[in-house]
Image 1 (cartoon, helix red, strand yellow):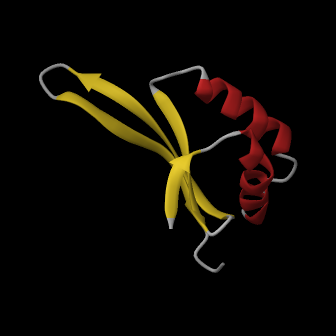
Image 2 (image 1 turned 30 degrees about the horizontal axis):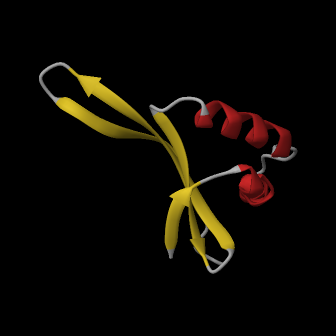
Length: 83
């Protein structure tokens, strides 16, 4: 399994994963969200892939807390285990 930064070529696969959860018609939204995330260095959308197939994703954000240092906070996670 490989974890990497998502890019625009992943929009169809990400939309397909979301449609399995009942969120149809998300391809344009995914493309817009990928563009937003690529321009914000404090957030990222990572995909998990096996071979050439995207199996899941996670959106995370960097945060900084007084006295606690910096860290990552996951926002959304989807992993399709049945593939």
